[in-house]
Length: 66
Image 1 (cartoon, rainbow, N blue to C red):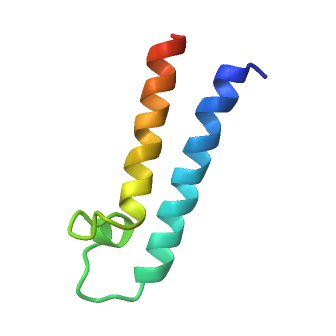
Image 2 (image 1 turned 90 degrees about the vertical axis):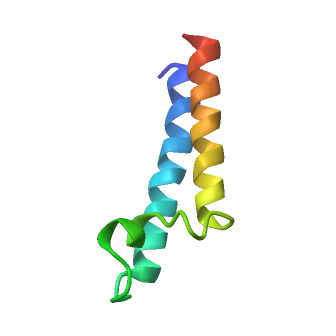
């Protein structure tokens, strides 16, 4: 497998794990909608910041390599 693909897939894997973790924490919260159970804009300074940072890393890699 090419290094470019690996560098792109590793952050995608961590994003997926963080989203699953966030949903697992809030799965029984009746006040949150389904989208808010996966990703909360109101609480952007926690897991969401890491997800946005990883998306920026992926975009940077894609721009540099392709």
